[in-house]
Image (tube, rainbow, N blue to C red; front, side):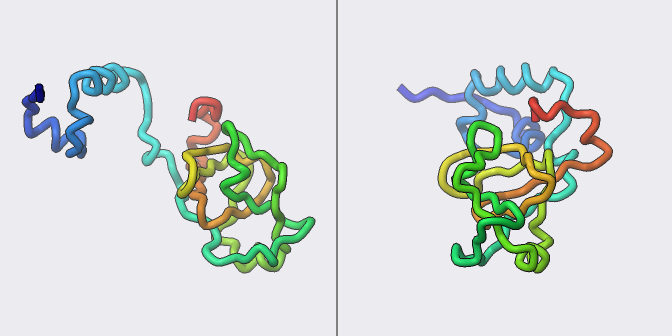
Length: 147
């Protein structure tokens, strides 16, 4: 038997969610509990959020240079450097807009859900990854284990 749930319009407007599953009572209870915990919204602490290099072919990879993170490198919250690709400095320089640094965050955009903290001084990322840099003013206040 189908069940119904009556929600006030201001709750829908406030949460900016229109998916019915969000308003199931169990989800509403979890949302209430989490809202009571001291927190900041991720969007409030992000300085940069962008996808990686759009068009780079594997024949541009090299044995040394700038680490180039791909989806296969995102494992259990850290970068797996097994089969890590590198790109030459000149390619990195031409794609400097997709450079990320230690303690920045990378998220899978395609394939499997995954995320990791960057553990290289500098690197570049593939088009299947979204890189995120936190605002400098907030970086020292956060424990990266919880981000």
